[in-house]
Image (cartoon, rainbow, N blue to C red; front, side, top):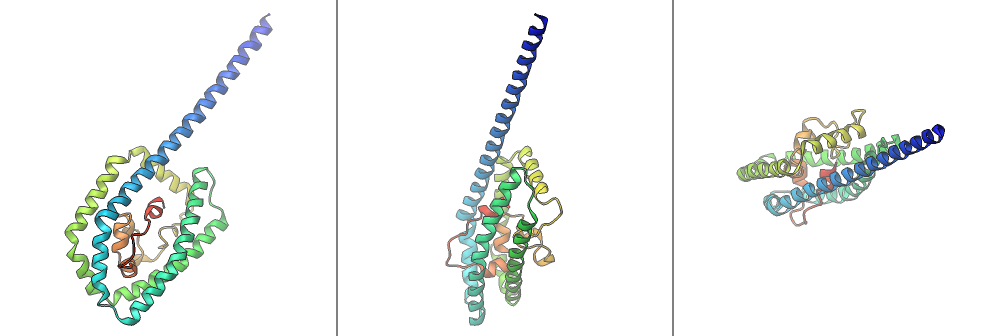
Amino acid sequence: MQMSMKIRVQTQMMFAFLWLGLVGIASAQKQDEDFHKKRKEIHQKVHSYIKKNIFPVVKAQRAKLESELSADHKKRITELRAEVKPLRKQLKTKHQALRKACENGEAPSESQRQELHEIHKKMRKIRLEAWTIADQYDTQIKKLHEEIKPQKETWKSEIKSIFEENMTDEMRQRMKEQHKKCYKDGDHSHRNGQGKEGHRGGKKHHKGLGLRKMMSPPHFILLDPNAEMPDLIHDFEK
């Protein structure tokens, strides 16, 4: 009788622990879903803000530069844009796969890192050539940027507000931990293909999530004044 009672108690305890475990898993999955949903909402809000308020102004400024460019530079810029386009698609696909793997607790494989490294090398080469062209129009580009300086300050302030109003400290910490998990060896060549370009590719150009990137000389010179705004969600996700 006592043995039967003991077995029954142990069985009940086992089922209780199993139930708690299942509840814990379900709760963790719900938290993951909420996190990804909220992060996507924030990125979409920033993307929409840039598309409505920033890109039209930046594109108009870039159009002013077009008449200043030499025929040879116009031709080469067009060629560089064509080279960048497929590389950006490759990066987007590989970064999405990498992010998904990292979120599932899988570390990037050596082959994944090498593939990204090779694409980033090609991107850096293109960007460095864009810098070389931009340097020759340094005065004109600075003038065009100066014309919209007051607006830039407003944009930065309002984008910052979007993050402060929508992102919790817990979300910031989680994103930071995910980044460390994916790039624990200190390899930061994933950062928009910039890697170790020094002052020409420093991370300061990308803290604005789209704004500073568009306004940096190599991106500005490669910007097509007749094109639609690119999808910046991929840049945010990185």
